[in-house]
Image (cartoon, rainbow, N blue to C red; front, top):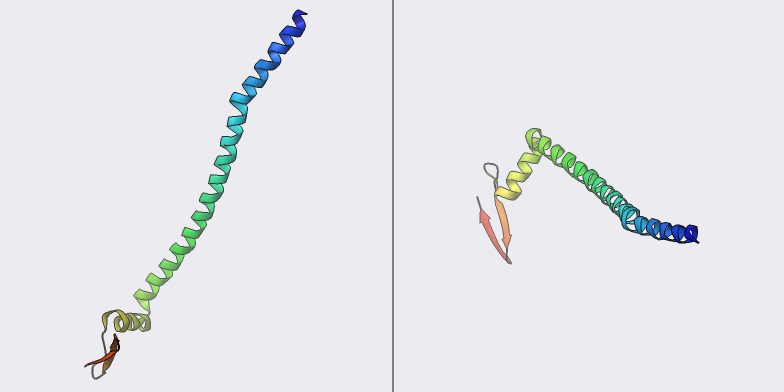
Length: 96
């Protein structure tokens, strides 16, 4: 009879231990793996974005056509003798 009670108490203690120690640990591991996967994907995305920005910087340093295009579009610059027409709210403005 004592063996049966001892076994029953041992079984209860084992189940309690598994429930309190192992199961939450497994959930934390699963959650950490999921977060790690998400962070790796974000890292790859950022690497690609970073490389794209590096290429754009190099082009801005070395590509005269790109520099001219930006100067024209963003700064409204023109070569000597050119006439730039700006369309704004349905009105035409001529700048020399």
